[in-house]
Image 1: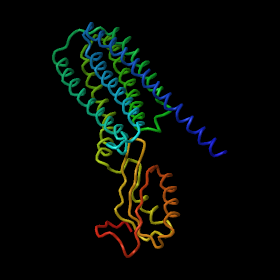
Image 2: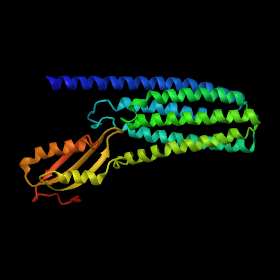
Image 3: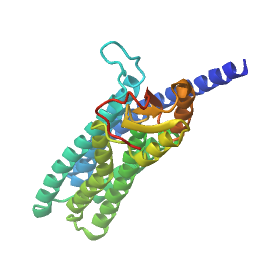
Image 4: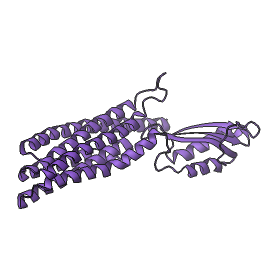
Length: 305
């Protein structure tokens, strides 16, 4: 009875966390979409490339938040006959797509910045300061919405890091407005546009690298495949292993398959339980093991003994 109540309580907490995270996505998208409209309008009115480039970046982040929320919901749909793993991989594909979208935005920002750098136009510094200041508040607040869940889900962590990066970028845009007000040097505006592009590349590169790795079924970052091998071979009764594969089902779930050569087939269930427990501590949630005795090994083997 106690275990049943504990499981029920854990499930209730998990359900509450998912509901809270869904609300965070909706609120974050609404806040940023409203701000993008304001910033874009102010950028057009005052001819500020800094505001327009930051608005374009923030619009990309709105799209990113929408896609992240979509993947967050798809991940929780049940598997079916066509998608036997469900739609878990959507979180990885969305991470990759977000990285690509942001890098495309960088190309537009750099192009516009270079044009303004060689053909400067007057810019209203005070408008930049006020609008970018609002951006700092909106982006920081959105990042705060994802703070408590950022270590549980790479998809959520990506959204959190992007929002924090946006807050810092908005600080830079505000600084350019102050400099323009004090010195009248409008060249600062396209320079800030280039700085914005550099910040986007820096904040996106890790996301692009990790999402490509997971899309290619690479070993997830933070997992040591040598330690995994050692774990398998350290279990009493395991003589060798081969066909070891570790990959990500989603941004939060890792799977493993392996063939194990065991000394006694009648101990296989105990071996499985011990291995699953040890691998769960390393963040591997789905484990599939195929036992073999010493005389019936498969012919195509890649030994990890």
